[in-house]
Image (tube, rainbow, N blue to C red; front, side, top):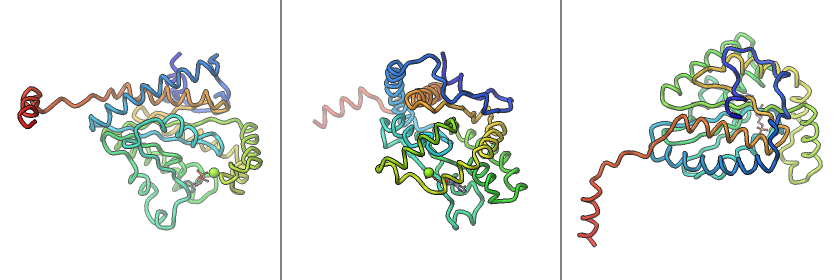
Length: 273
Ligand code: AMP
Ligand code: MG
């Protein structure tokens, strides 16, 4: 079973999120998932080492989801074990007035990865066709144009050898209620909760429609979308690690060819002592 292919949104299809399970586990049990996750992390560490040394291409992982789906924990568990020297994480919250006085991609573009790096976006430019659309923060004529603008933007990243992998963590609505209740009852989780989260939850169906359109309109060959079942944390981590591993294996970074004469350098080292 290839989870990276299983959760890739088939190109050219219209996404109906009710047809995507949030609790799928493909018959994998928790122990097997955790063992495989450990293998994937080991592979990711080796791939990242080569990516960083090669410095010719980069990877951008976009994570989008409703509140409590597990974006933060996914970043911590899947990317936390990588070498922090080559990984950047950027969370996009409400834009500042200064950011809003630019085009919507301005604040995004500053955080795309340079060659050799892995960049993770916790929320992204997709908020500009999700929260912005649902709450009518700009006129429809403005957000409607954004799908094409996003596709062109991601295409230009691809031309610069930045692979873009997009992952939507698909959470069940009832499960979100449990997770919100947990945030409200566990003192150490309370800081993550805002009253505004209720407003978002109340508009759940509008968000699902906005996600369906964003995923459908921006699911390109150069920047594919994946829809990952998220109700079970251990399975979500497994699926995300599979997707990222498959992408880095496709990129196949290589250690740079040596530019020095090793024998000569070893002789020199002896000579210098
Ligand atoms: P969190 O990720 O829970 O810390 O919350 C960040 C908040 O910022 C969410 O409510 C997002 O919907 C909001 N946000 C992110 N990007 C934008 C945007 N472009 N316009 C408006 N709100 C945004
Ligand atoms: Mg929040």
